[in-house]
Image (cartoon, rainbow, N blue to C red; front, side, top):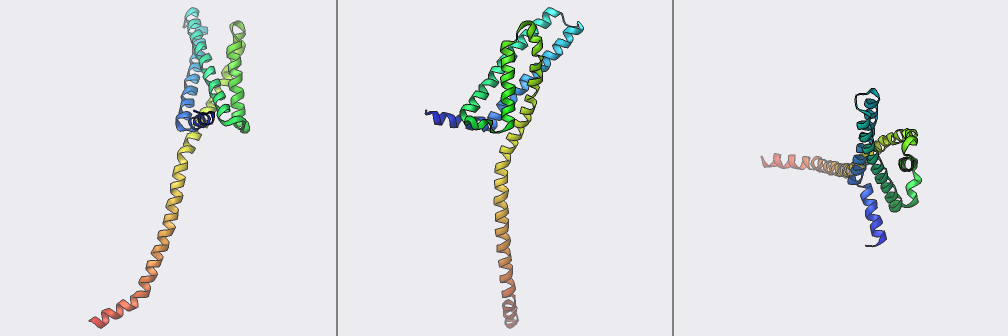
Length: 187
């Protein structure tokens, strides 16, 4: 397989409904993990969950967070590879790339006590909610295209059929006196 073919296939996948739904699923699970971690921290602070158990669960969610950061980095690299630097021509993609890079750097570099400072990652990750909305709108737009094309075809056919109907009406009006004469002479 050539590089051009692989790029085109990657581009097709990233812009397909399956690509959009994959990103949507990743973002949804990531946001769920973020909220789970927030709730876990609140319950631990309130003393409803023992600190040891809360820390263990928080560490597990931290690993998930790092995995999701890596997956989003992979998506970003694949997008830049498939679309080239033109990928960054839209402000949305620039901001999304910034959020992904910042989240990745903070997930990888900030551990231990400094990790508390990385609460900003949560705010950055919530940006991905907008990514969900963008993915949904892209999927809806993708489904609308064939419908718009079909609507245009039907409108053209409608105009053609109306013209044909008017032509037939005109023929009936022209032939009506002839038919009336024939029916009178035949009776």
